[in-house]
Length: 187
Image (cartoon, rainbow, N blue to C red; front, side):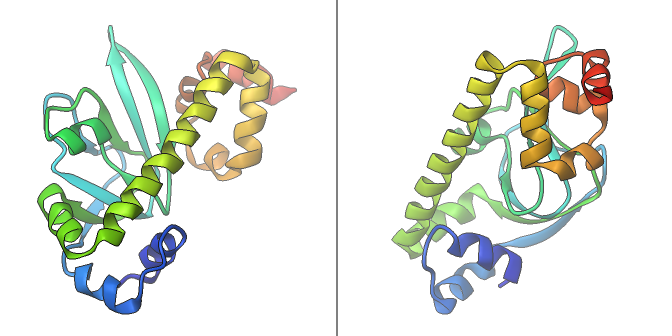
């Protein structure tokens, strides 16, 4: 099994080498080019991907305006979660912001993995808790922090995003205009 994926999974659950090897065949490598979409509205997200290399964003299009709800890079699982978990059409876009390499897992294969080992169900529960808490922190920051504080928090926690992601997307993610972000960065 890929070492990067093994390391990530073992942060949450103490898998043995044998337990990881028995599910490795379910994962398929995939490359997605910068600007391509892993998922778009009205399509069902049949796969989830572990990001080996690259940056992704998840956004909605509301009245022609993009609203970025998530940005993530290496060592995360990425998909339109509501679509993937319910196998219903997505309402959001999942876009590669860089040329990316992933290890893909289909919904059906994940269900098979759950049958193989209860540790995988535990893993998914722990991942959901982890990402739920991250989303709560993000919601809090949008409600309670100033634009300056949100930018400083992003720069402190994810300095690589400042270099890797277009400024207009960072501004959108922070809930501010590109002009406001430009002013903040000059200070």
